[in-house]
Image (cartoon, rainbow, N blue to C red):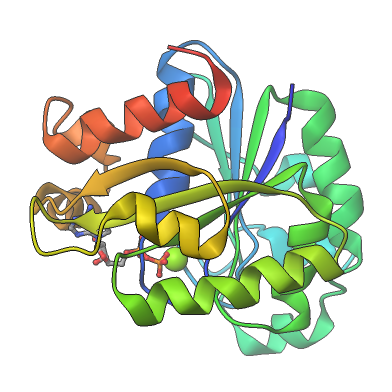
Amino acid sequence: HETVYAIASGKGGVGKTTTTVNLGTALAEAGERVAIVDVDLGMANLAGFVSLTPDSTTLHDVLAGAASIDDATYRLADNIVAVPSGTSLDDYAETSPEGLREAVDELRSEFDYVFLDVGAGISHETVLPLGLADAVVLVSTPEPAAVHDSKKTIELTDRAGGEIAGLVLTRTRPDGDVSHDELADRLEVPLLGTIPEDPAARDSVYAGTPLVVFEPDGPAAVAYRRLAAELTGIE
Ligand code: ADP
Ligand code: MG
């Protein structure tokens, strides 16, 4: 089966990190061994879930050749670990994004599923993971501008030699959105799932707990478990 998924978007702030954390946790709860990796270098996407000190080893140290991936791996819960990114700009200058291939290969051999939380936009560090992953999950809100920006991610994925798994629409509303199927059709990719707008998403971040644990029966948590099943066949 596909092991390494890149969770990517054109526009920022559309729910990539939420999707990475909750897809990963849903699969870990189903008994799969999962690693989630913050490959949005220089950003603290997973900081709310992993407590780090300034001396903690991060993906930056691994990419700088100063640590092994195991040293940058932090346990989140049963069956799931996170590899956070370093946030200092000094470290960032020393990292070699090419080392990412090696790090991802090591994780691939140790875990059943690896989710790469990819930065938005079109920089080199964004493009590389799109090609390293077995498949790319596009994340977008239903807003036309966000969906439109997903086209760039599709193009970049093609150029990087990657494959698109499909689209996840986040923060959807019961009515008022353009038809979800139509949005996926516009991008010519399968619709993998829709995650409704749910205030628990934000509350769970403040609590430092994945949504699927924080409010397991809430609409977004239920939708993330359904997405995990749709993507992998595991329930
Ligand atoms: P990205 O990683 O793409 O920047 P995040 O996952 O950090 O996006 O989400 C951006 C913001 O949207 C966060 O405040 C998050 O809590 C909120 N959010 C994400 N998904 C939902 C949802 N389904 N309902 C409500 N708020 C959400
Ligand atoms: Mg993020």
